Image (cartoon, rainbow, N blue to C red; front, side, top):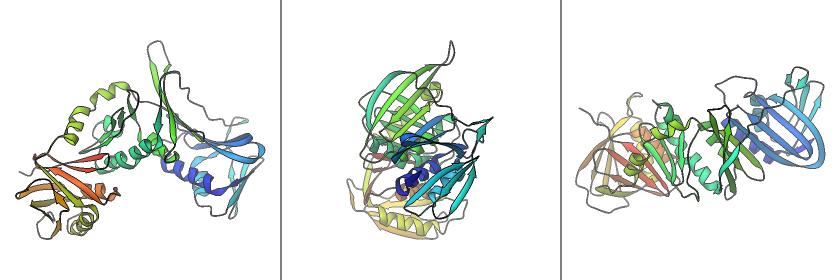
Length: 368
C-alpha cells in the first residue's frame, strides 16, 4: 500500500504530540491501521479517547496492522520521501521510505489486536463548531498549564462552555467565543492536544452523548467530527465542574481596571528576555515600575533595569509599582502573534494581558 507522505506525516506528528507517555498499557501504546476499500483509517486510543484519521487511497486495499504507536509515529514523523509504502509479512509490518524499516505486529492471542472503540451513547446536544475555536483553545489555554503547577485535580482540565474556555493555575487564561448551544464540560490536556488534527477554517460537528454504564452511573462522552477526523472522548466526573470559579475568573478578566496601557509586544518581550538573565534560576519574580508612558522592568534585586515606552494609554498612570512572575509574563507574550497587547492593572491584585479574544491573568506578588 503506497501513501503520499505529506498528509500522513502531518497527522502522525500531531498525534505523537498528544499521545499518553505516562500510563503504559497495551492499548495506549498501540496504533491500528485498517483499510477496507479506498480509505485507510489510522486509529489510536488510551481508553479515555479514541481518534480516527482517514486517508484516501488511490487503489482499493485490504489491510490491517497493529503496531507500537510511539515507534511508528516517530518514524513517520522523520520521513522525507514523497511517498511511503506499507506492507505486512508474517508477524511484521514493513515500511519503505528513506530506508526499509521493520516492526513487530501486536497480537491478542492468535489474532491481530483490535483497539476497543468508545460508544458515544444517546446524543443529548449537538452543534457545529468552527475549528478555529478549538485551535484557539489549544494555542492559548494550554499555555496556562505550562505557567503554573496544578494543586487541585480540576486545574489539570480545560473548562469550556458556550461563552469560552478557562484554564487556571496560579493565574488564568480566558478565551472568549460564542457557541450556539449551552454547554459545560471539562476536557483533558490529551484531548485538547488532539485538536491539532483539525484544519483551520473547517467546521467540526460536535455531539454530546449519555452512556449508562450501570444502574446508577451515566458516562458523558463527546465527539468531534469532520470528513477526515473523528475524535471521541470520555468526560471527567461532572462534579468537578462546580469547583471551577468561572464567575470570579471571568470577572477579573472583564472588569474595568484603574489603568490601561497598550504596549508593543515584541519590545516588551525583548526587554524581559534580557532582564530575566539577571535573576537566579529559583527567583522568577521582578519589579515593574509604571510612570505615565514608561514601563521599567527590574530584576529581583533591582540591579538591572530596562525601560519600554508604551504605544498608548487610556488614562494617566502615576508611579504604579507591581511585582510579577517575569517568566510567566514572558510565556504569555511569547505565545502571542499580535503586534500590540493591552495591559490592565491597578487593583493591587492582578495584571490582565489582553489580545484578540484572549485575556491572561497574572497575579501580583505581595512581599511582606
